[in-house]
Image (cartoon, rainbow over all chains, first blue to last red; front, side, top):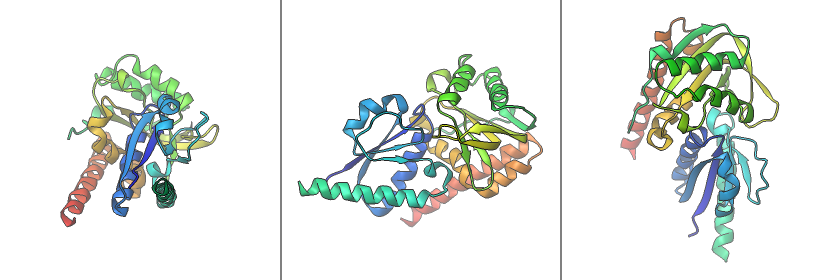
Length: 102
Length: 166
């Protein structure tokens, strides 16, 4: 089974990306889907994005990224969090299916 | 797990300020005076706030969580200020949306991986309306400290209870 890789980015990689990664991981645990989640600072985004399948960010993404990007702020405030988690989970399932077919 | 040390000496209650810069300066100066951050921290937070704004709208009021890179921090902690009148912060992740902020939690994070558990508990205050109301109504630093610790304790208990039921 393909393990989808998710990168969560914030301004400096010390606080909000860590928090969002932790929260998102719980949703995948509940779904019993194995994913790999990393947190990083915004300055690492362009360099690291090619190695990941999905990007979440608490900052504006201005870099040109060829991957699905989600706004991670719902994971901080809880407002719209379940909806965001559902979107990311469905994207992950989509990617697992695509990669599984190959 | 390393717990974050939170101290009453880093808490300000019902401060009156005219701008987000002013409250960032007060909290940053406090953290520096009390030995938690290097003298480069304050300016770095101010610069960061312009590039990566930290205003967040919760269900009931506006929060801001100004912070910066780990290299400017000596010891992980959180400084907290409640404001007499809200000031404008730009919204996290946006170009020019504004949030009217009444509570500022300034994070000083030395080693994010080591404190991620506590960091999660601290940031999860944003989702706890009961704690937010207590922060808003607090008239002393000690009340804020208590509300803060009560929240962290609750989240810990919930997690412990959850792990038993698995």
